[in-house]
View: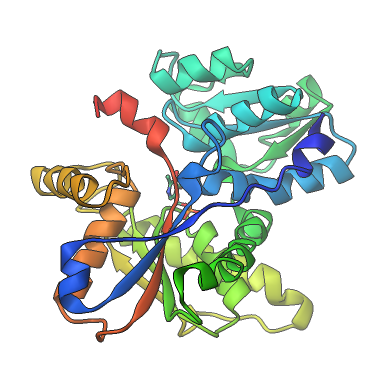
Length: 314
Ligand SMILES: Cc1ncc(COP(=O)(O)O)c(C=O)c1O
């Protein structure tokens, strides 16, 4: 049942990240290993889902329906959660039926799949998109693509308390900021809300600027603050976005893949090329460029996504 899933409160371990270019610059980085919270329900996806789940339970729903592509980390975590806690899930997929390692898992986890084609998938933001699906699956609660919006962000805001509870294990009494990959910016928006301006949050964008990460973040922050009638037209000063996309979402190149292989060998942390590898490479660029003074302490969020490596032969 979905209620059982709400009782699951995994903790991601916080570890020191040992890499030579950090040591040379005197910059300390701790990595919050969301990839380690579970073998299947991995990464930021669980935290983005958790508040949606809570809303679904409140609404009396018995299961969840959402959207994604054939490699979607979001659908993978959603399907795995449904299987683990015994509730039905439906996935609406972009494009035409294909078998990827992710799709095979979705089927094995018991998710009911519908392929929308490309034109059908483009309709996902249209008013009335959900109506036929809600008529077909009246007991299922719809979650927007990727588990975004304010609910997704609030679930990610919990990472702040998880970090606070572990700082002392590292011998840290404080930290100077967060560093993480941004796709929609939902996870980052959750950290901005949790920090409330206390520390900066650096977002290494896995998509080019025209994908609207900044607009998404502003929309979430405005949704959160409209109760206080404090609507902001632009990003707060504590939000720093950098283009880490290398030209396009999911585009890889030899330099990135070499960097990932070298980093994994040096620090033992598995990375993938779409989000975490690009985010770490962007951090290296900034550290080498001298953006951070010696003794700066940063928290790098490992947002998971490792299941997606299988389709890339990694
Ligand atoms: C592994 C991974 N990391 C980071 C992100 C980016 O998260 P967000 O969309 O909340 O910015 C995603 C999803 O988009 C993801 O799957």
